[in-house]
Amino acid sequence: MVSPRGPPRARPMDMATPGPLLPPYGVVVGVLLRLVFYLVAVLYRDDNKIKKQDMPAVCDLHCCKDVPIRNGLIGQKPPSINPERLKDFGEEDYLNGDVKTWEMKIVSRNEELLREALSCIPQPSSRASLASCTKLIRFEDISAAAFKIQCGVQKTPCMYSRLSKQYGMDIYLKKEFLQYTGSVKERGVLYLLMSLPQEQQRKGVIVAADSNFSMAVAHHACELRIPAFVIVPTSTAPARVRTCREHGAMVISYGTTAKDAQLHARRLAQENGYLYLEEEDSAVYLSGLGTVGLEVYEQVPKLDAVIFPAGGHCGLLAGSAAALKHLNPHISVIGVESESFPVLQQSLKAGHPTDDQACNNHHFYGDVSGVCFGSNSLQLTGKLVDKVVAVREEDILISMLRLLEYERATIDAEGAIGLAAVVAGKLPELKGKRVAVVICSGNMELHLLQQCIARALTLDNRVCRFSLVVSDCPGDMSKLLEILAREEARVLDIRQERTFVTSELFTVQVICTVETRDKLHTAQLRNALLERYPTTAWTER
Image 1: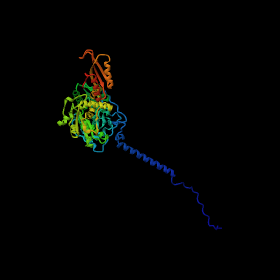
Image 2: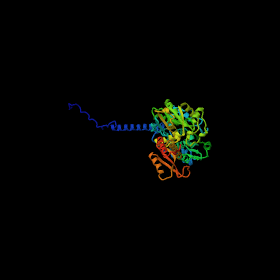
Image 3: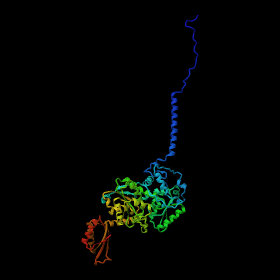
Image 4: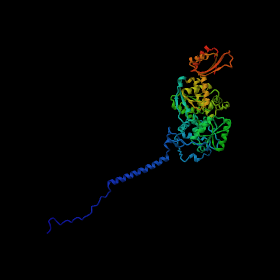
């Protein structure tokens, strides 16, 4: 019998239930993240490789002001060169295995100008001198020099001086004597040495001079790991010889005169391939010195005049004038030289450098008394400098005294000669104006310094001497001392002469040296002594 519900349906076959067709969501996300991290790491590594190959170190692009960077050594001073092994100085010593150098490209016209300046440096096959480079410098040359030497020299302060009230003008002193060797010559020397070809730097340089120039060469050549030789006469002061050796140069004493030393240095340069350096007016050297003008203009706003030392070596005056006149043609540029050696004025009047042999090797005046060393600086001076004045030796000595008293600075004649024009009243047109005075050097020998200060005090009416005759009786000497005490004069020395006198018997001649405040005080003391002792004889200076 058939069921009314119809025929029975077939039972479905037992089949295994299939699993999911895709992996879990967490696994997919993990794989994708790993892939992203891997790609980022690969791209970052490739980008670092490209930067290291194409870009110099950051310290090369932005000069670190606090840490010196020289010859690729960052943050440390290169080891000094032992003078005894300079003759064996080779390429392996120069590289030293760990020195890296970077090439920097100046993206401006300065690159072309700097290349022109470098072309003035003679090759080893040419004469070892810089005299052939007579190109007049431009502002761009000085800018390139300032960029290149900014890590090697100090940016010295240009500070307002307390002397301003005494002389009726705003005086700002550019203290170039604070350079490492105590002289502005470092600027030109450093740029000159840095511009030398690498092959010449490996061979070395030689200089024959007892001057600030030679000390600057000794110091910066050692800093740049360039072998340096300094030839000096046997009469050179031992302190100078010791200083050059401490800077790292090989110092050789030869001959009795500067000419003998120069001939010996030229002979050594020709035989060994050294570059003979002397202070000439090459464009590279003048550009380095001209950076002083850039700094003065930057440090003193609304400047009216700048006073520089002049004389035979007028590279500082010429180079700085080129910078100042480009920045502001209304700034007066004034040079100062000595009346004893008016080399620059004579050269400007004659139209060519003059050779005055009488002014050579003067220990007091230093480089200011040298001969005019080139037509390049002379031409710049005649074109850009507004005025050249001459001062007396007495004015220079008083200027040295003023700097010692008011600025606590020990300055030599070359550094003080600019201020001497203000002290002597040679520039009355600057009254009430803002004036910068460049103090370029402070290398004074101790024995000479003592003589200069003693002489300056006498010229400034601060130390005076007189002689008088008193009776050789008890109490007369005390009366003289009472007068000196009443007039507030400080007794420095007092002597009695009883034998070699032409006065009456039982009298004594008293020779006394005293210190006073100023000229007015000296006049008051003189009147008081003449009133009590009419025969008082005042020793004239």
